[in-house]
Structure formats: C-alpha cells, structure tokens
Length: 417
Image 1: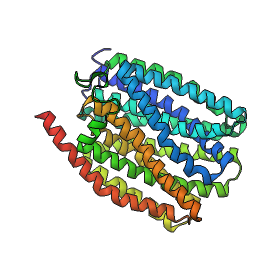
Image 2: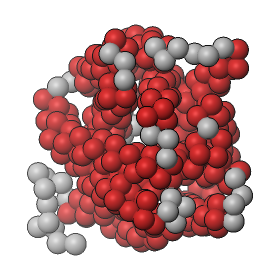
Image 3: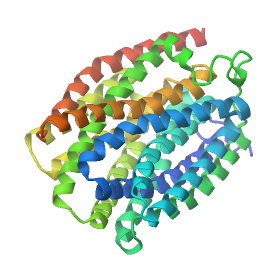
Image 4: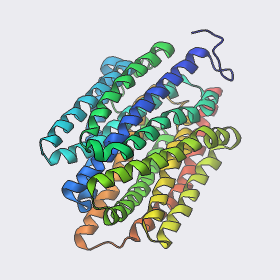
C-alpha cells in the first residue's frame, strides 16, 4: 500500500488494516441484528418472559465453552486462522439452528439464544485484540471511535431490515441472512492480517505456554482484575434494564412477529444514536478529556436515565434507559476501555481479554439473571425492582472505574521508560 495513504500521521498499512477489519465488523454486526431480534422474539414465544432469566443464566456456560475452544485454537494456529475458523464455526451453528427451528424443535430457540450471546462477543473481541495489537495509544485515540462508527453502520442497516421484513419473511428465515454476512467477515479479517501482519506472542507466551485462557495475566495485572469486576457490574445494569424493557414490551405487543419488528426498530434507533457518539462524541472526548473523566461520566449519565425509568413507569422510559446504556457501551465506553489494553502483553490482549470482555460480559449477565430468576420463583417481582438494582450497580461502578484507569498509568509509564 502506498506510503502516501495516511491519516494524521498513521502509516497507510496500519490505517488500511484498521478500515478493513472495521468494515468486517460492520458485516458481523449487520448479521447479528437478525440473530438478536429473532432469538429474543422466538424464545419468548416458545417459553414466555418468565424463562428469559434462565436462558440468560445459561449464556456464560456457552460462552466459556467457546472461549476454551478458542484458546486452544489460538495456541495451535495463531490469531489469523483463529478468527477465520471461529467465523466459519459460527455460520455452521446458525444454519443448524435455522433448520431445527423450521422443523418445529422448540429447544433450538434456547440454543440460538445462548449461542447469540456467545459467538458475537467471541468474534468482536478478536477484532479488538487485533486492533489493540496493531495500533499504539495515540492511534487508538484517533481511530477507535472511527472503528466503532464504521462497525455501527452494520447494525443500523440490519435493524432496519428486520423492522421492515420480519413479518413478510418470517422470523426464522432471517437467520439465513446472518449466515451469508459471515462470509465477508472472514474475508475482510484475512485481508486485515495480510496488511498489518499477524501479532506474535513473546517466546514465553507462544503456543499457550502460560495457559490457553490468560488467567494468570488477569490475576497478576491490577488493571485487568478491576476491569473484570467492572464488566460484571456493567452487565448487571444491562440485564436489569433489558428484563425491565422485555416485561413492558411483552405486555404491550403480544404478537411475536410484531414484537420482532418492534425490536428491529428499537435496535436501529439505538445503533443510530451509537453511531453519532462513535463518529462525533467519542473522538472528541478521547482527544480532549482524560480517561478518568470519561470513565467517571459514563455511570453518572446512565444513572440519570435509570432514575427516569424508575420514577416514570412505562415502555418509553424503560426503553430509553436501556438505549442510553447500550449507546454509551457501544461507543465511548468501548473505545476508552480498549486503550487500556494497548500496552499490555499478547496474552493479556488475546487471552485475558476474551475472559474479561466475552466471558465476563456473559457471566455478569448470567449471574444477575439467575438472581432475578430465583426471586421470581418465590414471588412476583415489582417492575421498579429492576431499575433499583441497576442504580445500585452504577453506584459501585463509579469508584471502581476511576481506580481501574489509575491502575493503567504505571503500565504506560513502565513501557515508556
């Protein structure tokens, strides 16, 4: 690639690789919108909202199984082939779920729900592992928002397609579109590695010598340990808000295909808001504000939205609180968090990261779902309980986030020295 192809001092080959994998992420998230809306709607139709916490509880198990397989795959074939083979395996499972659902096999909706939670985080975190191994701190501040923005174009389009065509095509048939979109994901990922090269572990980290899951790095590195706890807290907030919204929408929209269409419209609006933050707010914030300020503002903004949902009952405030969380999570929280990985080791970026940002996400969601499910077996839960739980998690989030960012400073200073 010509050396004249540059942006703000970033070498052309690095910029090209970044843009290629960002486009691959757009295809990935475009297809995920089909899986997300279909899995949610069909599972609720088959088992009702009361069973949602149970299937959400199973998600961490499915995610951990995928991560264990990925860790061994990474040790055997390296990052480039790992992401390509992970993508191919995801396509196969989605196709199998599609066939089973059309055959009337109801448990396939539960399998699909669990797999949707697992495959997307596994693939997305591999994308960020590549970027964190390719870009330096300054380049990450310039490009992370752009990557999030380009990737967000996929779910915006996907949500609109689901909203417009779910009732015409039928929910289950939308899964075929998700399978097709995984083809360019694999091709663009391969091209990104071709441009930037394959990140290599140190001699001591090669072939998983320190473990396939990066557990040692997670325990030894303070910024990673605190990040893992923080991720569990964020997903407690997410789960409470999602369950709150699902209860409201199930009561108001009983038809499954109409509900799928509503979810498609919601996620399209959500992703449009995220795109505004990704293209505009996030790059400006990362350049002008410290990471401590950014990570402090996120739980405060969420707290305002959740407080509104608590004191103003109804679907609109519940959906708004959920959207606020997701918009911030998909944009400035993601971009700011990824910068903390850049100075760390290969095992931290490629192994511990999957444990934190893939398994940790689903573990937090699964544990909080299990608590809600157990409480539901004892008594009917008031709708106000869900935003109250979210506010409690946000109160713990704020000081932990500030400490996490401060923990990262010695790592950067040590590398620069």
